[in-house]
Amino acid sequence: MLLDLSNCYNALQARDSRFDGRFFFGVASTGIYCRPVCRARTPKAENCSFYASASAAEAAGFRPCLRCRPELAPGVARVDAEARLARLASERIEADGLSDQTIAGLADSLGISDRHLRRVFVREYGVAPIAWLQTQRLLIAKQLLTETSLPVMQVAMDAGFGSVRRLNALFRHKYALTPADFRRTTGTEHAPSESITLSLAYRPPFAWETLLKFVGERAIPGVEHVDSSRYRRTVVITRKGAAWRGWIAVANCPERHMLTVTLSASLFPVVNQVLTRIRFLFDLNCSPHEIQEKLGSMRIGDDMLFEPGLRLPGSFDPFEMSVRAILGQQITVRAARTLATRMATYLGEPLQTPFKELNVTFPTIERICALEEPIEDHLGPLGVIATRARSIRALAEALRQGVIRLGPGADPEREMAGLAALPGFGPWTVQYLAMRALGWPDAFPHTDYGVRKALGNLPAREILALARNWAPWRSYATLSLWNHLSAD
Image (cartoon, rainbow, N blue to C red; front, side):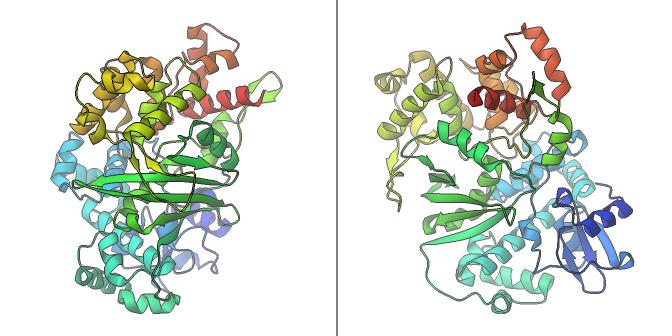
């Protein structure tokens, strides 16, 4: 990523939130690096240097600012083709912390050599993948030390260091403090806790109520619950053959441009994975101003369609969401929700939570794959027709075997081709999953009933021609059409 020094300095002078997470700046006179939205006094231009990532700033010898807290900076939306490999690699590293593979294995999964991966990664982020991962672990450790009272040993484990000794060594090397000394500077006290609350930043504006409404209409009772201000759900995360089960609650703090995320103590060991999934679900890496520049003029008659700050609802559990999408083929949202609820009730596992609305986890990939054939004998009594039952089983097997990958770090074009090859996956299902299970901003289910109705039932070729004007944000355009219908 090439940075224009003049433009970067102008952005930090203006504290322009559109550039938050796009670059960081180091201040030579203090040895500290900041986000462009930092509220500290603006440094002189000659004291500033600019970096494409927090890792690059730390590699240059700068320490993170305690005021603006670089670990809270939102990510960057993935739309630049030249940076695609580096972005995919960073998303996969962030999603699982390389817990199950090496850099060479990561490169192989992307279909390139590890040498080429290192080259594109350095070009995009200014550092090698291992250095980038090290900084991500340090930043999550710093966030846990600042926002929680977790013991330092648990912070080391939860941040992925494997030992307190390793955390201490890197923390002292990078920040000139031990974790314990750093915590004393923040005033965080020790106290046992059954949950922790962390913050995730986003670029404003954020159409939070619209997103909650969309997710709430599709929420699976017992697994998810949405009220006027908060999203809650049960969680199962499998890592290295072990499963962590618990609950999360997410609320918006618009005055701080942040989401607050509360998670149960049982999920502390997979806190990185939880936060990554929440970013994906709520599209926190979105750059809303870029999308509005393209879609702000969308209209039907006198009605403006695009809502500033619109987010693309992803998924916390891509398999769960994909199953719900399969169940929803050619039936209403409410009917699909009913079928998904039955699957959770009869095939999921009970879970105790502090919330009466949450009491079960959705069946995992492993649970579906373990059902004896024929699969329709298990799902048929729940109201799932045989063809859709077989589609669910085929998807579960493909995900279990690694033939298909969904969620953060997936390559949309590759995975869309793989999904299209599965039984029962037509164009609508593939495009819908591209939007929500792959986070692809330019998907467009042109055969969708709501899309066609909103556009006056134009012929398919005219709809496709019109949609070209909305690229590369056609997923957001689709949401705008759906929202227009629901508002009528």
